[in-house]
Image 1: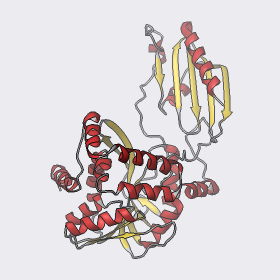
Image 2: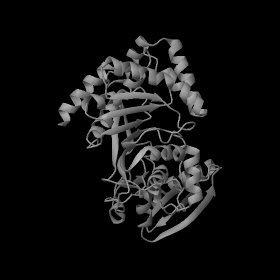
Image 3: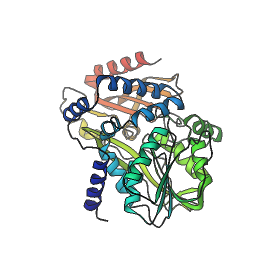
Image 4: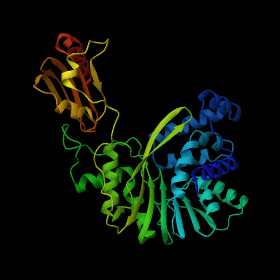
Length: 393
């Protein structure tokens, strides 16, 4: 199906759910105020905070509230382009699967879209929010879809039933959005140890282990999964991929990052994975940082540049490590390495590289920063160093 045709079908479908596209924050929030009362907004804010700080019951309570027919069109219109992007990619991967499970389907916004496009396939949507499932069932009946059913199941309590050719999981396998993931071996590398106990602890505290095991119980031995989780950060992406790999999943094709706009804000999500059990991966799991926007640095050119108001060169991306490693005649003047309360190791150093001064910062959760200037202006580098060291615990 051509992208333009598919996009038109998706937009028509999202309109049936009451979702609207916005490109302006002011327009979106003006519409939000017309649709929701101040009391509605207070309740939402309270449940969002409880969900962030609470347990699974707080999360269920949030999604039960979000299923309110007055609330969900407003709430989910913020993610309009997300539905477009995920829907477009998923349709292209449904292939020859006949029985499809949408695990963590929410309201069934996209589940019902897939069922409409593929009436010959059978779809099951599962979610642990009973209010969400009630909305999904109502919409499926309204759309007269006889190839889909919805069930309320909490996999942390109950096992799943059935056998499926394909499982779709979108932002459901890992609910702990603020878990930093696994640290690298040291601040000098992005590589992670293959430590089974560390991996198991990550899977347990994020809920990934039990959810993935439940899915595996109902997926055919050669079944596929379409997976998109909040694993953009390398520290989360690596243990997530290892969780898939240790359960026998291989990549069908290279994973691809998802980019979409939430009203005016650009969001980098994903990656989007198509994996299959028992497959010898045609594409190896990538455990290195993605290509970033850091500019290349030429040491000989920098010496001939006139100084701007700021430093000659600054890089806050993982590629800063390469720049730091390639500085010629690098000599450390002052450095400190500390362990932070959250377990990350932080290294800060200032030094010289020929006629240049530099500041370099790195930690075991993949953050890198290098600042370079001429030695005649090293006071700026010294000030940066002292400021960062003072902020360390």
